[in-house]
Each structure stands twice: as structure tokens, then as C-alpha cells.
Amino acid sequence: MKRPAQSMSLFAGVAGLGAALIWSYTPLTSSHASNPSPSTDPRPVAVAGALPAAGFTDVAKTVTPAVVNITTSGAEEVSDGGRHRGRPDDFFGAPFGPRRFGPPMEPKERRGGGQGSGVIVSPDGYVLTNNHVIAGAKTVTVILPDKREFKGRIVGTDPKSDVAVVKIDAAQLPTIPWGDSSRLQVGEYVLAVGNPFGLNSTVTLGIVSALGRGHMGITQYEDFIQTDAAINPGNSGGALVNTRGELVGINTAIFSQTGGYQGVGFAVPTGMSKPIYESLVKTGKVVRGYLGIGIQDLNQDLAKSFGVTGSNGAVVTDVKEEGPADKAGMRQGDVILSFQGTPIEDAVTLQRAVTRSAVGSNATVKVMRDGQEKELVVTIAELPDNPQVAKAEPGPSDQPLAGLAVQELDRDTAQELGLKGKVHGVVVTAVDPDSDAERAGLMPGDVIREINRKAVTSLKEFDQAASRLKKGQTVLVLINRRGASLYLSAKV
Image 1 (spheres, rainbow, N blue to C red):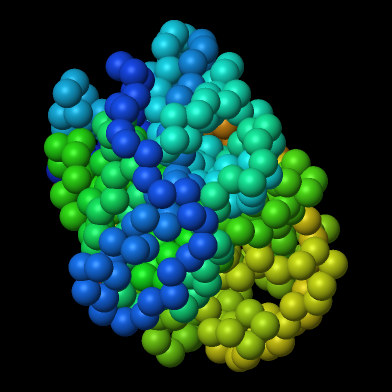
Image 2: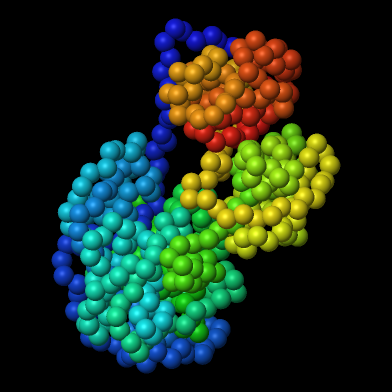
């Protein structure tokens, strides 16, 4: 292992992406298109199976009156870069060209506005849309397909799921009835309705191409419906409906190399958006369940290190002191196998299950600890606004410690890294390109806290632990990366 030079430079690498996840939201550059008003009959059409063209026509006539155009205006702070951190239209070039992600820039004020879509879900004027459509807006205008315009009042927003609710003062409005997104199947027909590029009342047809999409980096809580129904800028907040004319999703983002439709769109399912809508209307906020743990996915190498068969499960990387999990006896390094009797596939699966649990309820959690299964009973708490234990994103996990420079973690270095509280270990100061350490996913700024479940609090302990490693041995390394704990598994 190399000892560092006197000076130290800490940085994080940014990988370029050939394609970009882009919010389907349009900057407002011209007035909305004037289309003929469709029928305002709010009744859903009961149809099933593979429909002929006439069946799709009936569904389209039924749902389009309840999909509105939302325009916003006012000054706001936006970011020029970074991955899905600014307003969605910041990820479109001109005209909607490809955009590569780079380090985030400082926010700046922009004057103007944008437009998106929304869905009327109650006759008295509650409209469901995306948070990014109305975020930062000073004024919100809702335009119905029959050209009536209303001033919209923001009832509540949930940036963590990108869902928002707007209210207009109107009555006897056409609506789209709620559907059950849990009954969707891959290959099922769906229609996307919205206002792409300001073209009102646009309907596109496709199929459900995947369900339960997570790890997309779009929102904090993800359970997306993936569809190939054409979705373009301006479709954000619009309706995804099934062949019975029921709302099953809110169109949110597209995956694109050009800024336009390329066959992959994402919608927030009603199984997620409906409880959020009800909570926002009733209380103005969203209440989620909370365990007080940090988690990461379990891969094959980690599974071997923790004595788990297969690679399903979520590894506990941190336990919040005096949190619900801590009080139930959960420990760092436990592998969660099931929650309330439901097998846990990965960290996203666990996150969904916990956040949807009722606050105050008791949950049975099965964990693997030191090769033995244990059952713990945890009382679900309410997720705080700024939970201090977070989910860390792993890097590659092939090999490790060659090509690594480390130094002891002192107070100044910990402050530079933004670490709070007592974090002990050695800090990685440099990683040789194309080295085993780089392939393992270690990065400058990582703090190594454990090697093979043994604490590392000094360079001496690091050297002792490294000297015990044998060629070909699998090594389990616990690191702290930007305040979140993460396990890496590698071979020497």
C-alpha cells in the first residue's frame, strides 16, 4: 500500500453517460395549441383484452376531457447541471438535443415558465401532476381541453416521489377514475394522454414494457411503470390509462439520447400516487414509514461474505442510534431477507415496503446474522424530514486493495469530507487508474472503517488487516462515502 504525499487532493469521478434520463416537461416558449374540444362525458368505458381501433377510440374520447394543460410562470432557482437535481427542462438542449451530465453548477435565477400536463381526479377540481411541473412557480394556470382557464392553487407537493396536487375552483368536472396499477402486466396495452410540445389532448398507444423500475436516479422513491407509449416534453403529469379507461400512472420521464421519444418512458404508478394524493389533500404532507437504517443491495460477492445463499436481500450498512431498528436489536451487517413475510429482492423493494407501512404498526423482519436467521419485531416510526441514515449507491465489486493510498482520518479531513459525528478509519487519498482498488469501486474520499468485519481506526490497524489477506481471498470492506456507509466485496 502506498503512503500519501504531504498534500492531499480529494475528488469524486463523474462518469459520462451515452444516454440521459430526461423529465418529460416543456419550457414555455409559445402559447398553448388550440385543439377542438373533445367530448366531456366523464364515464369510463368498460373494455378488456386486446381492443380493436374502435375500442381505443372510445377510451380516448372518455379520458381526454380530464387531462389538462398546466402552465407556470415566475422567477425560480434552477441548476445548470447535475443528475436530475434542477428543473426537468434543464436537461434538454436546444432544440431538445442531447445533454451530458457533469458536476452540478451553482443555482441561478431564471425568469419565464414552462408547461406540462395534469389529470383531474375529482369533480370539484383536484388535479394530480408531477412536482417538477409546478416546482418553484409563482403562478399556475390550468387550461381545460374545452379552453376554460383557471388559476391553480398548489395543495401540496412530494418531491421524493415527484407527485403534486393542484386545486382549481370548478365543479362537475370530467374525471378519470382510479385504476389498480398492481394488476398491470407486462405486454398490456396502455394509452398516454398529455400535451407534448404544447399540443393539447394528444393520445399515444403502447404497452407496459416493464414494472417496478427502480435504481433510475429520477426520484428518491421509485416504482416506475415503463412503457413504450410515446411520451415527449410536455407529457409530464399526464395520464397513463389502461384499456378500461382507468388511471394507472402519471407520466413522468423519458430515457433519451436526443431529448425526444425513443421508446422508453416512465410513469409513477397509482399504487404510489393515490395514497400520496389522499395524504396531501387531507394533511398537506406525506407520512411514510421509517426504520432508521442505511441499506444497500446484496450482490453475489457480498452474499458469500455474509453467508447468504443467493443474492436477494438488503444489507444493513448503518443503524440510527435510538431509532426503531436499533431498539429492535438490528445491527450493522445484518442482511434483511423478508419484511412482514414478503421476500426482499433488493434495497428498493425494502424501501417501498417500509415507506408504505403504517406508522405505529409492528413489522416482523427476518435477518441473516453471522450465518443464522433471526426474526426481529420493529415498530414503524414516521420518516423525519431529513433522516440521517441514507441508502448508499455501490460501485463495482470485483477485486481490491492494490493501487490504494490512504492516510489517517483527522478532524480537518473529516470536516473537508462533510462527515458529522464520530467516524473513525483511514481515508483513501488516491486510487491508481485501472488498479484492483479502482475496479473494486474505491474512490478518493472514501473512509475505510472495517476490513473483514474488523475495525480499522488507524494506519497501523489498516496495515495489520491488509497483511493478513491472502491471494485470491474475498475481502469485505466497510467504507463511509459522503456520510453514508457502504459495503464493498472484492478479491485480493
